[in-house]
Each structure stands twice: as C-alpha cells, then as structure tokens.
Length: 249
Image 1 (cartoon, rainbow, N blue to C red):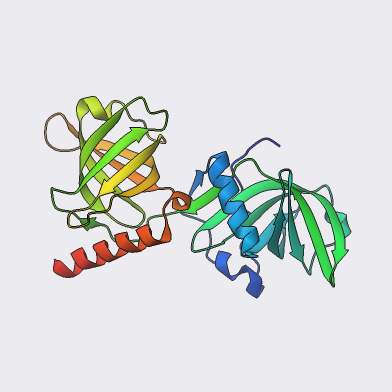
Image 2 (image 1 turned 60 degrees about the vertical axis):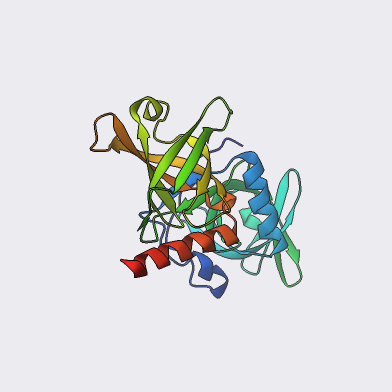
C-alpha cells in the first residue's frame, strides 16, 4: 500500500496494554525509517509481544492489541476487543517495543476468533515511522569532540566539531562549503567521537536545522538521531556524558 505519514488520530486508550503510548503525540516529530530499519523494529516488536494501539474507523475507534507474528506480507496482532466487522478497514498502529514509539499505516485484511479474543491480520507496512522529540538537556562539549558525517550513498564525508550533544541528537560546526552539501531533512551516517570516550558512536541522523554560526563562513548543523539505529548502550553513554557535563557546570 502507498506509504503515508501516519495520523496519530485521537488520544490513546486507557487500557493498560496501551500504557507505552499514553503520552500525546502532539509536538513530536515523525521520522521515516527505511525498509531494513522498519523490518528490524517490527521483528523486535513481535518477538517481545509489544503492546500496540490500533486506531481505525470513523469516528476513530482505538483497540488495545499486541504484536504477535510477522511474515513477508502480513503482521498479526492479538486483541480481546476486536470484531469481524473491522476486516477491510484502514488503520494506524502505534506500538513501543522499547523506550521509543513507532507508528505505521496499514489495512486490516482479516479478523478471526482466537484464544478467547481475536487475531487481526494486517498488511505488512513497507516503512515504519518513529516518533521523536528533544527530551533531554543538551550538554556543551569540548573542542576535541568530533563527528564524521557522510551521505548514505557514500559520495562524501566531512569531519566537524561537536558543539553540544544529548541522547536525542547534537549540533556541530561546519564550513560554508560543507554546509551547502546539506538540506533540512537529509539523512546521514554519523560517527560521533566524544572527548574522553575512545569508542565512536555510530548512528543514522536527520538534519533538522542549518543556521549561520556567528563566525564568517561557518554554519551550525543540528541533527536528530534515528532512534532505531542507536543502540541502548550508546544511548546510555550519551545520557551519562550529558549528565556528567551538566553536573560540572
């Protein structure tokens, strides 16, 4: 089915299965994952039997469910509150296999009774969206913290000084010629080397802002991490770095 940016619809259900999605989505940014990243997220969700909310119908109905089985063409969810009348209905699914929140659009192709509830069979989405916002205070870094940015096609790479960082993203300073390579919304590969930490942090990032940096010919590029490409250990390292820097100022 065509990929469309999911509509968060109404507020989530109060059902306890929906707790990971209980916070409203207003003010958040939806980042589209590529096909490989989307598959990884869906497999993790089914392996963990992650809680989900299925939003469908007019007026919107929200159904608590759990991710169960993923195949090449479909994804099965279990629910105690579905009904056969939902077969053929478009839907938006919100789920949270870990700390991050994801969404995708699909259609319910079949609803069948199962184990005292129902199994909802949905078309497998080509792409999943991760819902992100800046949730952390950003720590200023020392000049020796650097990042290597490269386009995903591998046609160029640059090194830049990191100005501030958090588990959500970072800002770096680049020369005008390098800044002209970027556009807001571009997806890049990043290798982040924090001062005092010998192991680089690798992740996919999206350019969120490009502004003049005060010094002639220099620009500040602000980026946001793709949550699905940042390992839990790396996120924790960034959080520790941010907290340590904050306590020192």
